[in-house]
Length: 130
Picture 1 (cartoon, rainbow, N blue to C red):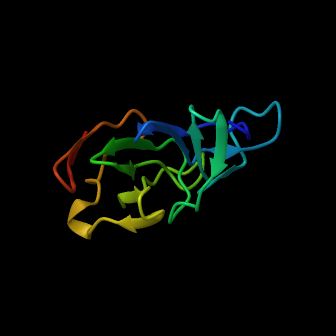
Picture 2: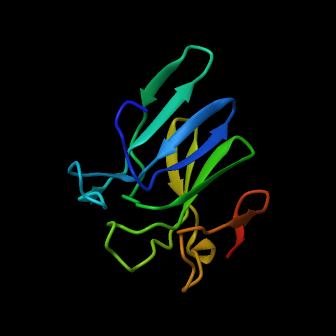
């Protein structure tokens, strides 16, 4: 990973590794000073990292999963010290190199924690998270 980050989510999609969100901060501090919307992709065939377009929102300590050739990102907080969970589910489509956000009925339920969250994906939506 070209830039060290904490609280980052990773997942494999179409043979490439995606590193999403997380945060950076000052050396020696336990928590990063700010969260990032950054997305970086690693291609093992070329042994190179590539910066992609940012996620629609910043996320720290989030979860990510690949399904049907797309990367689903959910949970996390806007800052490392924030208590409010980001409820929107964002989807990255590598074929289009574009982000979208799932409709409101797919938002994470209140009380769901992104830290250690798991989700179950249906054909095109987040079915439930716990």
